Image (cartoon, rainbow, N blue to C red; front, side, top):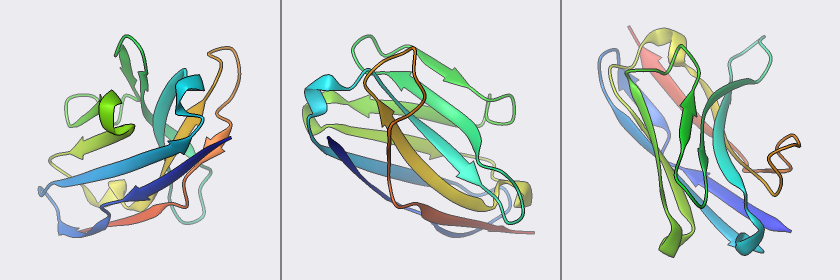
Length: 119
């Protein structure tokens, strides 16, 4: 089992920045990749970004490209999401996630952290 705690959300004006953090514990040696997802009110949860734990490869949703950066610190078992040039449409609950196998869906989820971007 892997436990995830995500933090760093808050209220920011459009054009501002936030950095989300996710701390992993438990069987972290089994992690294949970690990602960030978000869910806006009335919408389904959507993928934002992910990073391969061992090699550091990254991928992003189109909405995040050029504005968000995912990174990891293997020594701290942590993953981060630096969000710049935030827009009101980025308002959502952001969830950290982890999986043990690249062929499966994400297995483990954080509790979520609220990001609100005011116009």
